[in-house]
Image 1 (cartoon, rainbow, N blue to C red):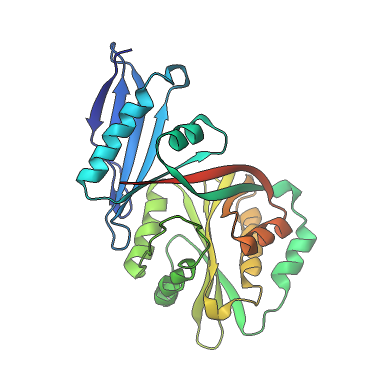
Image 2 (image 1 turned 90 degrees about the vertical axis):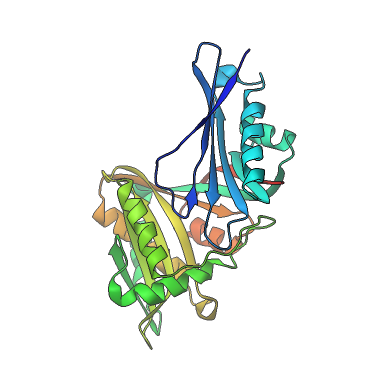
Length: 293
């Protein structure tokens, strides 16, 4: 089959990066596959490129994916990238494709779901209501309030040491502008960002956070983003406390919401224990791959 690869210009907003794209079409001009490459532009990640590639099931195993990958790799090299990262569900055609084309598996993620109609509300209220001396919870929708913005941005470094196995995770530097830009990006997609934080009562600073992104209509499943606690405040149960409050607020604020989704590195045993204890049920595994250029 004759395949033509056409570079495209993607006009969509991408936080801290550029997103070139390629379209694969057959001799009749019918699209059969596509590839997107996120080229990070922020300091600490400007050596990485993130790949998303798809081929129509009926057109697989005819070289289309390889042609798209060749175009992507050439562009990444030309842009001075050292690694291309991609991910695929374990056991899927994408998993086999990446493994066969020189990508190295660097991380296994377990995806899990909490059905909100099955939540033990009494147990949840007990977790949320438990006193944690020296700390309090607060939350907001959308962009962080001005009085918490600086310490909230500083608390993001709690993610720097999360288990990532062999992935070149890089270090993302967060400031108030970046925090607000991330919230705006969620809003522009038509989704709702809800954040719960733990505050140190001694100085009013944010020392931990958990984020949840809810569909704009408040229906279907919401997606957890990050949950983390600064090193000096770990060991007090703050992660579990914040996530329980996030669940409680999701049920209260969005009664039509069906469930909450989360993904956790298999090596992150601490967060996996929290998820298991709160009733999240594993659904599938996703493998993250990395190609060295």
